Length: 123
Image (tube, rainbow, N blue to C red; front, side, top):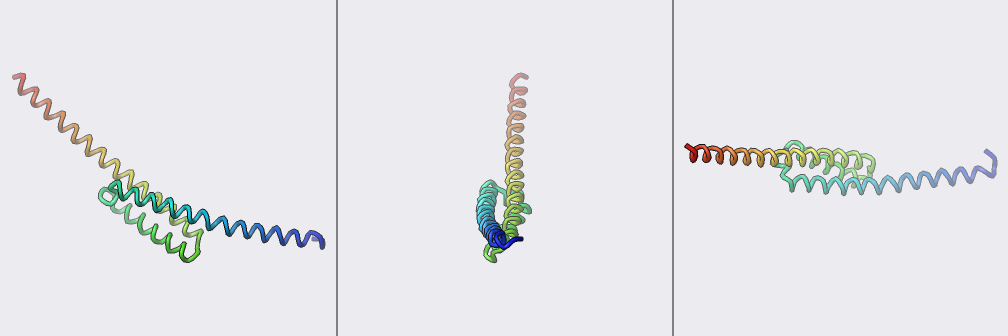
């Protein structure tokens, strides 16, 4: 490097480091917030009732992500938050599936009862 390019290289490296550090803080914060909302949504959808293991995993990972945020380990926080979000989505999907199955079962029971009534009435 020449004497003229040295300050430019140092400035560029410092700028890259500054941008890298500041950008890692923001996505981790956003990831944690989005994941928290996903865990809350799954809980509201009945995830604890229909998918207790997945909900427990999501909550544990969410707590670990928040702890990593407090320790300023933003990379780990982002990873844990994304895992918590995936677990929460799985729990919500299982809850929705179980509710849909219960509704379909109830509908089939209603149809069966109506057919029995029609059969009885026609005899």
